[in-house]
Amino acid sequence: MAQLLSVNVGLPRDISWRGERVFTTVWKEPVQGRHMVRRLNADGPGDPSGHGGEHRAVLVYQMDSYRYWEQQLGRTNFTLGQFGENFTVEGLPDGEVCIGGQHRIGGALFEVTQPRVTCYRVRIRMDEPQMAALLVSHHRPGFYMRVLEEGEVGSGDEIVKIADGPERMAVAEIDALLYLPGHSRELLERSLRIPASSPGWKGSFKALLEQETNQVSTGNAGLTGAATPPAAWRGFRSLRVARVERESTSIISLSFESVDENPLPVPLPGQFLVLRFRPKPDTAPIQRSYSMSSALEAGTYRVSVKEEVNGLGSTFLCNHVKVGD
Image 1 (cartoon, rainbow, N blue to C red):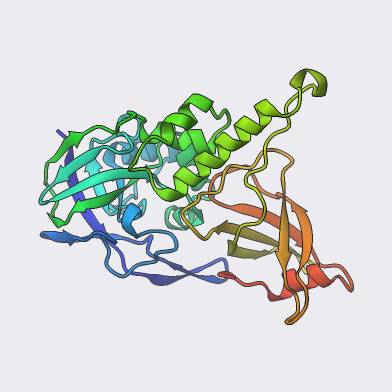
Image 2: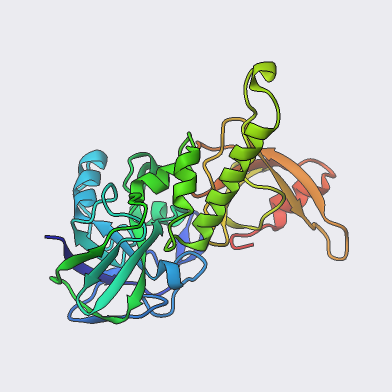
């Protein structure tokens, strides 16, 4: 029997990390008694840039994954809510729970909408630099649910499956489809037929499907030797500075994260970022290209910048860019 073991709540707080202040709700603690779950956010006022909202009202993580990571990481100091989840549950494994599946817990009804979007905050909470990438590569991301019927929940409540997702695509399968190599056209098409899937993930899968179509309809792999990997997206998109690291007196590293529900695909070897920014007010924006400077992982992109003498772009990036920009 699947069961709700703990309801965990965290209000936004500023965390000091690597000399920077990070605004986050990833620190969650169990609450006693019954807890009212609303449609937009299980925590109440939260950090909607990363969590909350209709499609990410409740984050779920499994006790089986707790045991797994204890063994993998050699740790025994986990506490409930350690992975930033609102619900710690027994059962509901990522390999079996389907996107679009509906589950009743206590007086509320929930629908699974997407895997967790891994970001650097889970690395801060876990004190494990590779945690965001590990959640993806080990197929244990956890998942979000939206609230179809508001109600009270509490530890000990039975979790009753009401319906499977229409395409029966598991959380781990959907997560791998976006973040890991090998995008099956059939699976992409199936993913777009799931009404409950969040708009951000649908947008990412639609873009991947369009890229697959363009690769088939243009070019000739027999002549070129191999198909050129598609770009992660078309044109420019806004990213937020997740952290700034001072590597030396003249070199910094900037890490970027998504500012919306569209997760960042894992970059391919050799890919780079084109940054477009305005170093001075009332001037035209400039563009600079930088290669990725970190291990290929989900959730963030990182570039390193060397400040050049009289370099307009590098001087601005090295001296004026802050976390949260």
